[in-house]
Length: 505
Ligand code: HEC
Image (tube, rainbow, N blue to C red; front, side, top):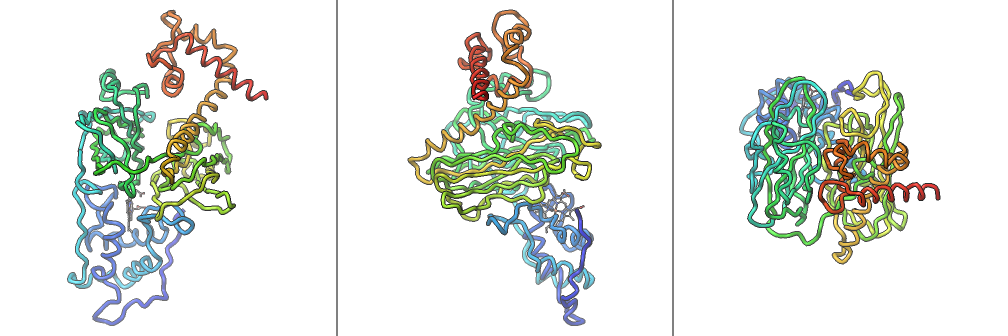
């Protein structure tokens, strides 16, 4: 992937003997401060600091390699076809200047020429948060073993409703945190599950989730939602951090701190998310044969109302190679909303459009995601390659692109909300097909009987296999008692027969 560095020899190396054409303080420090130091300073994600002449000149050759490769600053979206905010990309001139400085012998120059060191808030990228909460105990992540999914309850005890502009996550052991999602629980059920198995937090998604606030994935620089947009945070809600750990070879203790930034007022419009395919790709039935070099999934959705799109983000694991989301407007115009020509699982950014993009009613939004499950893919976590299906382990695959925006016209907000809900519900069609393939309809009475360990005719949560507890239970458990009674089991039966009939038609 890394190309050989070619120095740009056409540029003059030295202007005169006394005054080098390029000096660190005058020419290089401004580039480094503006593009590198936010991450490359003590306590941040960069593996070493780049804050002064000594630190930068010591690593000059590596810096030249990574900026020429465009490996740093990290940025993966094509910003020529889509205009984004805060693009982290050096111009060819800036790269040439770095190379010219190295070729001239890395002259330091006069410190009086240096720009002033940028002001960073210690510990926070977005400045002092309005509310800071920390996990009450650290969670032990072992050196080896399978990925771990664990939820942690962070009581917020807010006396009044708030609107959230941003959440900044500070893991104490960054190397093992694959990602965290933020959920809300206003019923207190998560608190009752916390620590029951003797370790901080709890497993599974069986708490009554009452809302979601986005998530943190590596590489995402915290950013406040654009304009007056904000996500609702009702008073009395607990924040649930749902963290995916990937053991790193070294035992770690993770105690996450979260900084929350509030909006001053409620937003004028409600933010909606359109995820294609929904369920982080679950609905696409991802199933990649070993050796397959160009596996692709696609999904599309027709917008029922005019939408103003604000930002976009993708999610997938190691085998993914490219991602693209396009919008075809009713007049046939095509707009690229996200084009990631070289997917990198370590840099799953959220990309904010430079200007909100208006997509008129009838626009078809489409996402296409490709995977390489051959031995030629250097990111393939398994050698030799094996069949890979949708799943939550990082060696399984996922794949989806999420577009976030608002209804252009406030009177369309409800319709947009219902259509994004209907889009999410499509994961149940796939789930149903999986169950159908396994012959669950035919075997349902026998399955219920075999699962019903205490023989009371109901299926309690504890009797269900772990993987059925979350989405399926939430969908079927109409009375919310965390058990499936005979009428709820009948709904499952009806749903599967309806699917069967639908497929036959
Ligand atoms: C958004 C945060 C971020 C920004 C901005 C950033 N870096 Fe990095 N950098 C990282 C992280 C994290 C790593 C370690 C992981 C990796 O290599 O991907 C890294 C790794 C590196 C490495 C080591 C690469 C290697 O192959 O050993 C160099 C050199 C580097 N950065 C230089 C720079 C320079 C120069 C800039 C600015 C032009 C920059 N970085 C901007 C976060 C950042």
